[in-house]
Image (cartoon, rainbow, N blue to C red):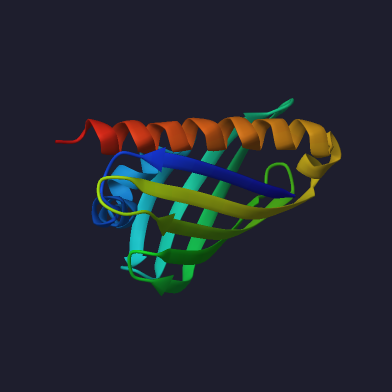
Length: 150
């Protein structure tokens, strides 16, 4: 499944970039994310994703690996995790792009998500709706945090 979300933020690009790398603040915007830890700054992180999707409560201990960065412009990362209770695996390829000048930054998220196991039996529609909802809540929280900071 592919997901894309663009958000305009009234903040300079450097402020948005620094916010993304402030793991505690950034992760606090992601619904269902807990126990985020830095393993190797700028390279490897871990977190646990907890959500209710259809009849399942999923809990994916996840490892996030930063594959590429272009300062103030782009981050490419991948995340993977397994929920052993419902025998499901999650893999996410993520591209984050920042553009803009002055006091406005355009933040774009493109994610390719693969889910296998019992969770996949729910079907594309249910999973896509839940993922769209989480992505919308996440981008709005990021926007609020950045625009609300002085």
